[in-house]
Length: 63
Image (cartoon, rainbow, N blue to C red; front, side, top):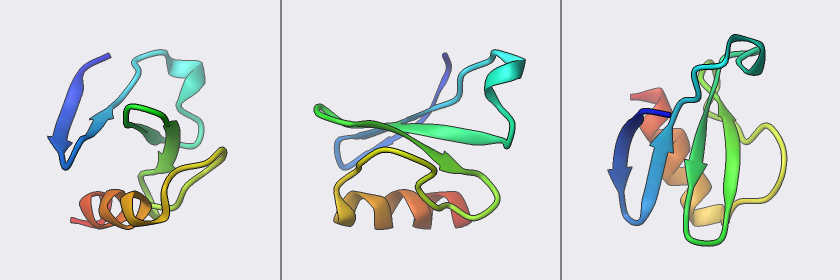
């Protein structure tokens, strides 16, 4: 799993298993959370993630 970015204690990774990426997404990881985010919209796809960190991840994806 290559690390794409690391900021404010959030690590952004992408797993390379083909069946896992429909729809295409990244994983944002913190000390307590690991959640998938849509590459198209930057929205949290499932699970929980701190609201402030969600905003940072969405901003990162949209850039």
